[in-house]
Image (tube, rainbow, N blue to C red; front, side, top):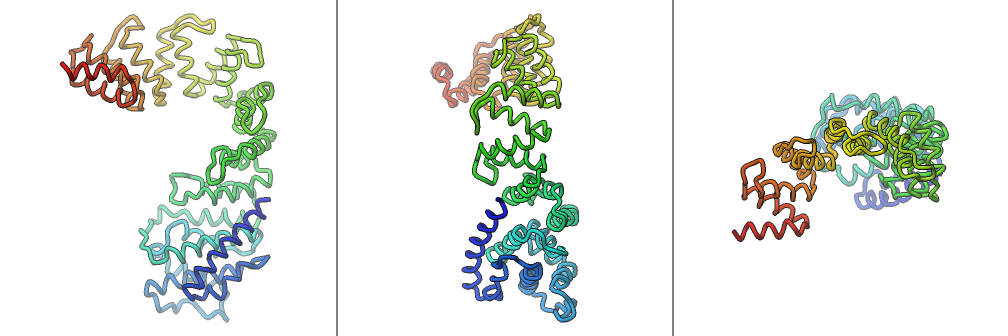
Length: 428
């Protein structure tokens, strides 16, 4: 179980903390054992936080802390909260945002339900305190601070064991654009929510294990989580489960089960599942080849905004495949929709179509535009084609300088033809 894993990890982290505190000879050297008990009390955690906050204020020359009453007349928790409230501005300059939020969260608890999870957060604070306490941090603005919402989620997660709150907390820490992005902490809360049968958490956690985010890549664990969520009707989990059956990842390849789950996900509106069904019917994977069904699913996926389907449909319409009449304008329409989503092959194909006049009208300028878009995305063949267009000077004025530039870039990308033509131009 995840709780046992976290307890073991906490124990190892406490051992390393013990070494840090003993070398520095602080209050923590005698009291770190408060975190090592089988059942950690909230009072013990607050004592730790109280010492951290007090230490930060003293280091910042705040020696007159009259607002904090003696412990005999006020609880440790109230002392911590008072320190945080009265010296908020100063602490914002001394603590990075993720640590600041953690201290507020832990200090605001009224009861303790998941001791391992809270102790893990206290250890985060202590590790930061002993390793980075003397560093300078940029103060953060009020508009960047949504800690009150996060505190409420934290309390619900810990005190009420609310799976939805745990999931939301996992989402908060998984947002890569956030200054609080911490995959391991996200993993912790998603694990707790998933263990309570929360389908969204199971799906997100499956992604973590499939992609190796904050944890070692584990296809079997990902498969198990996707399956649990899919059986609860989660569309995206069903699609990912189908993908794993389809590709034999974490489970034996099984086209029939893959199709079953792709069908389910497609009916729930998952565009990627529709696209894969198109492939299944086009290639006859576990079913008879059915061009009509293949086109139907490609079209539905493209209309739902799936870029690979838009690109595939562009080619089908332009060439007149899968029993469809050739429709140049429709093909261009779907290529352009894919290009709007920066599909590099769509960029290249549009460049080729216009530069070669495959619509019946040749437009070199349009061809150059689209080839450049592909080249900027790293497409080496597009660089070669740009070299040809500038070198041949068909429909535009020949430009040897530009030709040398693009042949050079294509040659650097490993295209031998470009290297030969580059040497010829330089030898002129």
